[in-house]
Amino acid sequence: MLLRISPDAEEAIYVQIRNQIVEGIAKGELEYGEKLPSVRSLAADIGVNFHTVNKAYQLLEREGFILIHNKKGVTVRPEGIEKADGAYFEKLHQSLRTLISEAAARSVPRDVFLKDCESIYSEIEQEQERSAK
Image (cartoon, rainbow, N blue to C red; front, side, top):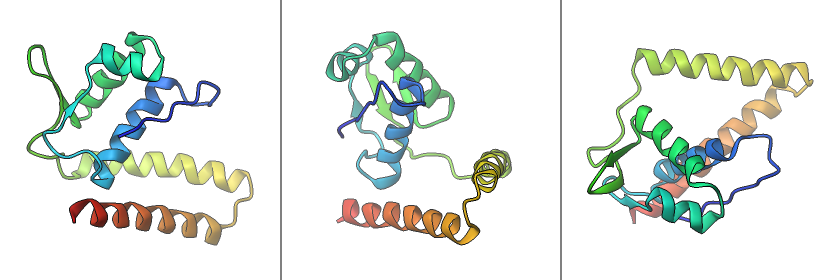
């Protein structure tokens, strides 16, 4: 999986790394149990400070996407990602509320917003299907 980091983006680099790894898992580009590059190796590959990668990895581990072993390295959780529960749905609701509020404040039409959500979800499902083959 190739990470595309944009130093000029509004999102912090560690958030970009986190988001792209989560998307890679969602699309099936990263398999459960797959080994990820070490902190130093990934930092060198994408040209960022290793503390930035470490921050992304620590966040991913806290969120249950990866496991960090001192001797075995970093892997996508072998048993898979925990299914959504009530706490996750509450977090999702709050995140969506913020995105929808911003979109509404910027006069994004509801149908455009919903169409974009549907399009992104469909794209991820198609990637999952391709990866499963």
